[in-house]
Length: 152
Image 1 (cartoon, helix red, strand yellow):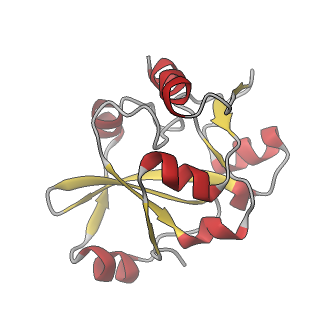
Image 2 (cartoon, one colour):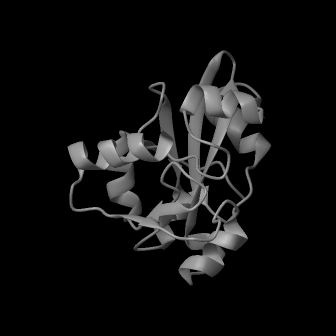
């Protein structure tokens, strides 16, 4: 279902972007980087967070770490990661396939400025073996994301 919702998202919003499906899992940054033959930073990981009573998605470069102080300063409260069950229920995507496209529930999307160092990044596409190649700017545009600085 999740891969299908991402397929539909791109069919409706960016038919020029193809979903890459591989036979091996790309559920972690290391697996995805090896499978796509890119450095870990080029994998755009999507983190599902709860801040106050709002669930948000933060997309960052694969080897970046969230900075709790920057997160709190940006959003005015501490953030917590969602549980695996919450991620699936709210995004419609499995852990390892979470992306800002084709979401079950409309969510605020934020892109960390760490992504801007790459001309092209690879976020997942709704499954643990799928991804897309996209510029960080286009990803932010397609998802109405705001640019933030919350990583180390």
